[in-house]
Length: 216
Image (cartoon, rainbow, N blue to C red; front, side):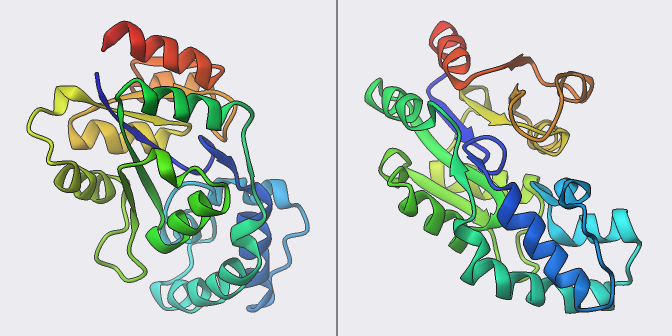
């Protein structure tokens, strides 16, 4: 197993502050006050449009008006309201030095993914950085993963594995035909990850690295 795709939010970075405050900002623009930021944690990871629909049942028109307002705050302030989880850089460097091909695969717009990896100086460990488009062309996890396969020139999907923290990562991996390993320190739970089909779940990235070394 030499080709590893990493999710971003909840896997490499804790992005709760930037995402939830930007969602809060967007909701206020239509008169909805959500003072409890923890109630907006569900927006971390999946596409914004999906969560605005699932949580509030907004119409497509309302969702279309909220996303630019969200992005206005996120791209100027929220994008850097995040932090690397402990041990992330060390594990990425170790895997890179061992010859693993590392790719980022996130439902976050690719421009923000690149910004964040460069901000934390970990972009050097990734061969490819793949995210969503700002338009509707590539939004879902499976679409992101399929684009990643193209850039990675994947011929055998059994050589690729996704590392993620929520059921959305597992669902995307399953739909794309690859395995997903879950981690528990992000925004999903062990039970959720296993229920949706993660082949293994670990508490730290160091444990993930040991697992990968055992299957490579």
